[in-house]
Image (cartoon, rainbow, N blue to C red; front, top):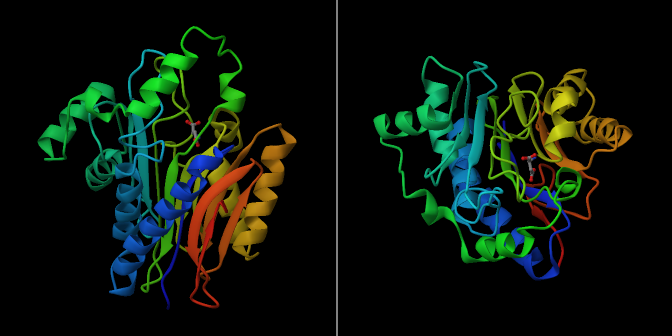
Length: 297
Ligand code: ASP
């Protein structure tokens, strides 16, 4: 079985001057993951490696360069899911962990499924996951954005300001699916607010024989739809990943939600959909072997 992979770098109105950086960052992440898959590696390793690339890239709303919350801090959520075993690992509201997806991977390997806040940070120290001063994840660009937005009425923020969350899905040559999602959440999010990204079934899902899914967009509407699981269930009926993704997007649209998702089904077909002005994504076309990526500048 030829390995399959797709990544995304968020669905929103990406500013013109950042379009190319989003596309390039997604391609780099895809290539990192594909190198693992093409060498016979596991889908779980591939999605983790791809997400690390995007967390390290300040273009994206994950790791360094994440949007700041209302207090001007970076607070991160991430999760991974193994489609073979259904093992899951999620971390919520962590500070000072540049690669939250790696911490999620350690949670996945532990007897727990979700760790939040200080407990997750302590776990990072026990697992030798790289930690840093929380302030070191604040990029100059995001500090400036925060200064501009500070004091404005952001009551409508949740419907408009979601951003460049990152994610990856893969099918390895052993037929195993995996998914990963990582985010700094939405800009100016209230203290304690968590979107869909770290929730299994909402921000990601993976189950062999069904699909691997990672989402981005308006978390408050993605959560009640259990949007990733919805798409995986549709793919599990045997319809192609693209059709499953389109049907799921229709359900988000029906409740006034905006966002995007990437899907890889058990047959190795790919689905990519969004209803925002742009979505950053990259995948290797299973038919041609060519890399397909967006957004176009
Ligand atoms: N879904 C994320 C959240 O609600 C935001 C995003 O995808 O950019 O936190």
